[in-house]
Length: 404
Image 1 (tube, helix red, strand yellow):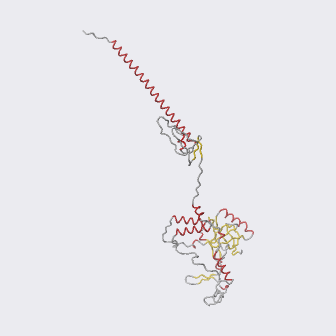
Image 2: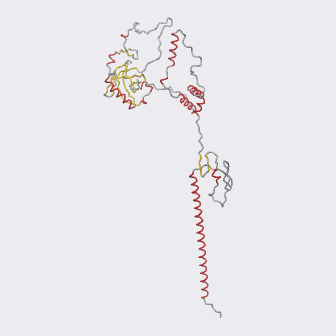
Image 3: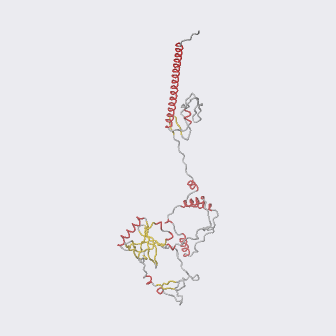
């Protein structure tokens, strides 16, 4: 590739000789102006407005037009005398994260090629430093008679430079956004998200200019003596009309995008509905009885305990009486109840043991109380007997008075 500019990269005190090469090219089809009557080519002639004569390229210079229309001549020598340090140097001024560069500033792109063998080492150093830092370099350079702003980044094993517009060259988007207040519903946003997900990602290398291809085919057809291509039928062109039903348009867009990807309506519906897989029942064995979670409780036979336990049916038991302990349970109740962990049996046994222990303690307390009451009664009788004997002895010892 032919270089369009030679200079150096100024990286602190490091100078890297480089050549500037265009990284992009225009593939658009260009046309010439012709005279429609005879097909002759129409060329531009540079004519002086004062004498009306055509001027050769060597006699053409530069000038700045003042506000009053006065032309101020500017020579190449005048421009060369300006103190422009970036005339032949790409001067790096900072390293910043890529996200700080506004895409609106992006302009033309160039490849920077190391100019000569001595430039290979510092060129590689800068390239690897950019890779490891995950940053881009902001630089100033001069090209085609003006100083410009650039961004250096690594593409494969090459340093690329993107021309950037100066910040004051970016116009503020005043009066561009819709002025009418609009409310977007959640359902519309959901459909927009579905359309974005359906379109998905794309390999940018597979995209191409369809219009240029059509123009080339039309030129080839006319060159062979044909009439070109037929115009599209009415309704085939993309419409710029007003959207009446936004929801319907979004739904149709999602459906069309899925059909373009080869998805059928059934597949689309399957993607939207969550798949539910039923769990298999787990069997738990406790004392010879098999219980299935979420299913029918089955026992190996019929157990009768004051009633009838029916396998897979309803277990019937008589009402509990005061004579029976609360700890007695029938096998039918166990079969009808949901499956319990083995630890629940141990817990029940512990509760029964605790209940029995509490009853025993209560009985022992009653017996002790009764015994204590009996002892108390015996002691009271003895005391009363002693008091009676004492009264009797006192009466005998007292002399009786004789009457006169």
